[in-house]
Each structure stands twice: as structure tokens, then as C-alpha cells.
Image (cartoon, rainbow, N blue to C red; front, side, top):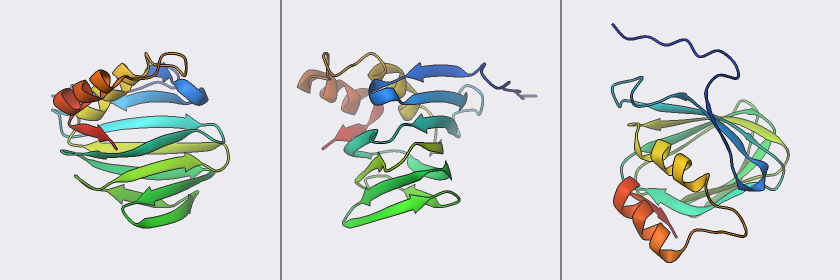
Length: 145
């Protein structure tokens, strides 16, 4: 029997570049590698570059704020209550138009968790190198384009 109760503030938490705060609410070890769930607070201007995942669907549920998305050839703004899904090999990027709060779900779990843990170590003064990007592809099947 498997269950978990995540108390507010007790989740594994990462303070990322540009002020993003992301907590892992459910990990692969919690869900037999079926899904990962992240709670992310994105300050205005926070962004993820164009990238794609080989393995997992990435689902964004906007709790509050506005987030500009690029998905393949489309550009749009998602608002509170909107849901955006980008499947495997679908190029995507996002940028917080205002301070935003988003729930991010990756299925199956695993690659995105490790990626978040690894990228939390980088800063503007210490950005990922090309070698790091190659590691992201090999370990997590996530490509920054």
C-alpha cells in the first residue's frame, strides 16, 4: 500500500535562477514512476527556453497569473484556470507575463525531476555549458534548443 501526505512547505524545494521556486509534490518514487507533480511560483519575466522532452508529457495548469507559451509554431498567453499540454518531442517554451503560480505534471515521472535537481545548481554567472546540455539529453532526454 502506497500513500503520501505532503504538508505545505515540506516538499522538496528548489530556488532556481530568476527567482523561480519549484517544489516537488509527488515524485516517481511516490507514484511507481507514473507521474511527477511540481508546484512552481514564477516571478514576472521568469522563463524557460525552447526545449523538448523525448519521453514525457508535460502538463501546465495555471493557478494564477499569466504565462506566455510557445508550443511548436503557436504563441499564446495562458491565464488562471487554463491548461496546456505538450507531449513528447513537442518544442515548447514559456515566460511569466506576471507573477504566476503553476502546477506542472510530467508523465511518466523521472526525467523532469532529475532535470530540476540538476538545473537548480546553475546561475547567470554559472550557466549550463554545452557539455551540461549533452548530459541533460543523455540522462533525462530533455533537449534545450
